Image (cartoon, rainbow, N blue to C red; front, side, top):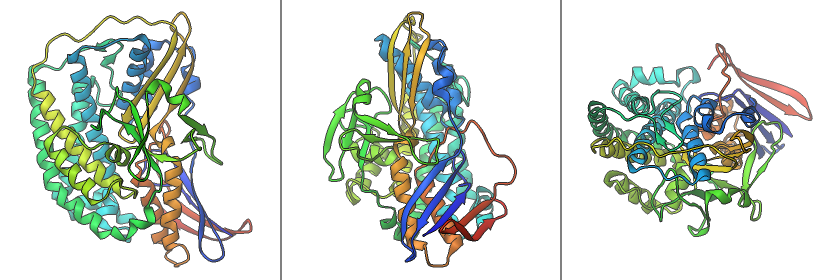
Length: 464
């Protein structure tokens, strides 16, 4: 048996390597993503004050801080039985729509754009956002502008562009000015126009890699929040849909521990998550949200969703994550325009005091279901914490996708295309590996092919 190792995997949030086990016939028996960095936040949070969680946990990641910020404050308010004001609810959603737009634009255009628009067979040293700016400047500028709009909305409503601070237990600490709201409304309308202009670019790009669809098929259930069939990013029950399109279970966030189980994975600091019922794998994120739900409640996104579901339902290829992200971006742009066009009052807060108990929050991060659970003592100090991030929920599906696409190229002698396609498969899931640590400078790509523990040859890239 040969073993191929890709280390590090590039253009993802965090650092990891991929191992492929290949038999003598060239068949890929297994693909495995190994996460090389340790999070450790559960242990770090012990002994901290409950009400500091929205600020502290936002520091877990610089890419999805608003998701942790929201999961933390939601957990606290659920545990205390607090219902926030309508104004606070609207402003939190406005911030979160900016967050989703920013994150999806980063994934779809900056991280995956070079693969989609330049091709997996393009030289790796040319497959980056800078080359896109040279070859397709107008499209690339629109892509980067979308990311900027999303980040600016987070900055205005959340108080900071990275690691927001305004969502606090009981509501929101401050509101944007009338002028800022007007500006955000204009940006929402601009984002809709930008997405309208980019849709053809994405559709054409996906059509060119349609031959990868079957290799990236994921025969797993879908799990997401749902508000009676409408997409919801927080404060909603969680649904599990099987591969035939039937909702087989519906549970409240507080009951997650009776529904899900974590598993340690070999050679990795990240755990996988499965359904307790049958120890079954599932997918989360945009693909799952658009499988489970049939409505966004915004016109352009609903139109795109109807077309998306009309092609096939439920969707089952990792390629479908890309189109699903695009549709969600349209929804976020529409909602930014709608919410920011409304007048807001100064009814931002209700009283909230820390106390003992169990606090559980479940939100839809850009990448899927994110869970925060805290247990506190009588003084409101954390005695334990458990965090389940979206990429953990997708872990089994990522490994399955890696093996599937590697099987297409293993044994063909196209080593460079093998490496590029396997990395592309991982990027489809937009994994976020809690990147508290970063590698600077050279990031060489190395693939070791082993047989019986002996290195037969090494394929390498000098710089990525």
